[in-house]
Image (cartoon, rainbow, N blue to C red; front, side, top):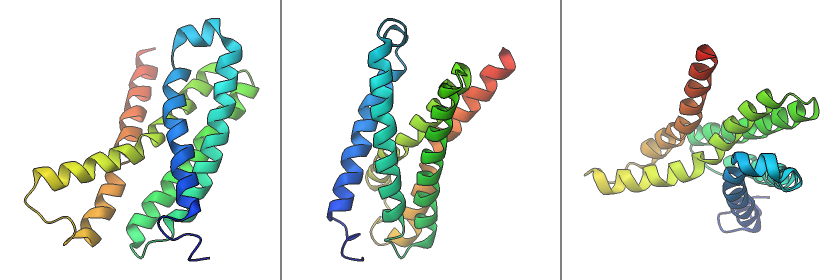
Length: 167
């Protein structure tokens, strides 16, 4: 099992590929013109996004435990669980024809898609903007940056709550 989860193994490639597809499909789903005038395309892309999240989320959950850094593992496992949960809630709401709830859950789902690129950018920024040796302090810095990658979800949640108060 350890070999199956080793970095560079097939499960990592599957996770990255399906995560990237969800990254590129997601923004298309938020374009009002496509939602209004190309409903079949919106539904097809939505089903594709759902499949990608299921695959990337489950593989991400499995991969999260392949680190001795417990706080980093807890962060990535939590992201995977929330990603699957939020996407499932979005799907459930669209089946009930509750479009506004569907849209809110999809925004949260996509915010979690952004956690991975946000983490990569945070690592790069940390390495390039500080004088601290990232690799020397990896055991402290990496878990902190993993939890910082929840920031897109936090911003999304604040915006959703602010919008609901204004409405």
